[in-house]
Image: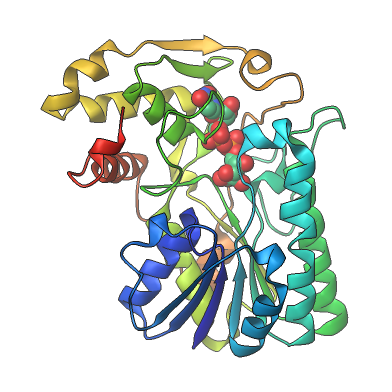
Length: 344
Ligand code: UGA
C-alpha cells in the first residue's frame, strides 16, 4: 500500500511515518518544509521524502494523490496562541490550503484520512463528547480562538457532504491532546507559542516560571502519541472497510487531568533525574490570567473528554498509556545525550 503524508515532518506525521516503516510493509511518500523530526526515517527504502511547501507544489501533490492509496493531509496550524495572534493565517492554511486536496481526493477516488480535532466540540458540556450526537459550542466572533475550531468543523462538513454526494471514502479522526516526544521544539519560545506540555518544559529549561492559565484547573484528556498512531495504523489498514466514512475521537478518557496536575507531574518526573533535581525544585509555578497570557481574543474550554466507543467497536482500539508514561518518554527524548545540548 502507498501512503501520502502531507506534513510528514510534523508531530503526528513524523511519529506515524516512523511507525509505518517499523511495523508495516507500506511505502510512504512525504512532503514537508522540515525534516528535523524525521531523522530515523530519512534514507529508508520505503520512505520517499520531498522537501517543499504544499501550497506551491500542487502539481506534485496531485501527482502523488493519483499515485497513492491513502492520503493524509496533516498540514495545519494547531497551536492556540496562533489562533489568536494570526487567525487569518490559520484559516488560510488549515481551511483554504486543504480544500483543493479534499477535492482531488474526491476526483481521484482516494481514501482520505483527515485530521479533524477535539476543538470542534468547543465548550460542549456533554460528560463525554460523542461523534454522532454532541453539539459544537463555540464563543462569540471576538473570541478569535475559535477560528481553528470553525475551520476544521467546516472541513468536516465539506468532507461529509462529499461522502454523501460523491461517495468519497473518508475517515475523520479527532485527536484529543495528543502528546509525546516530538510535539513541539523546546527552544526558548516566546510566551504562549507552543502547547502546554512543551511550553512548560521550555520554561523549566530556560529558568522561567511555569504559567498556569487562570489557575490551571481546566482539564484535558491527554493521549499518548503511541496510542494515537496505533489508531491511525488501524484506520489506514482499514480491514474489511472498518474505517470507511467514519468519524473517530482518538483520545484517552481515563487520562483526564487538570493542567496544574500535569505541570506538577512534569516537575516530579524531572526531579528523578539527579542532574536536574535542583532545577525541578527551584521552578516557580504561578497563575496568570488568560487575558494576560493570550490576549483578549482567547477563550478556553474547561472540559474535554472523548467518547471512544466508535474507535473501540470499529477499530478494536483502546488507549494503553497514561500521562506519566507520556511525560517520561518526552523527558527521556529531550534529555537524551544526542539532544540535551539543545536545551538552555
Ligand atoms: C489544543 C490545540 O488546539 C490543538 O493542539 C489540538 O487541536 C487540540 O487542542 C487537541 O490536541 O486536542 P489546547 O488543549 O487548549 O488546544 O492546547 P494547549 O495549548 O496544550 O493548552 C492546554 C491548556 O493549558 C489550556 O487551558 C491553556 O490555557 C493551558 N496552558 C497552556 C497553561 O496553563 N499554560 C501554558 O503555558 C500553556
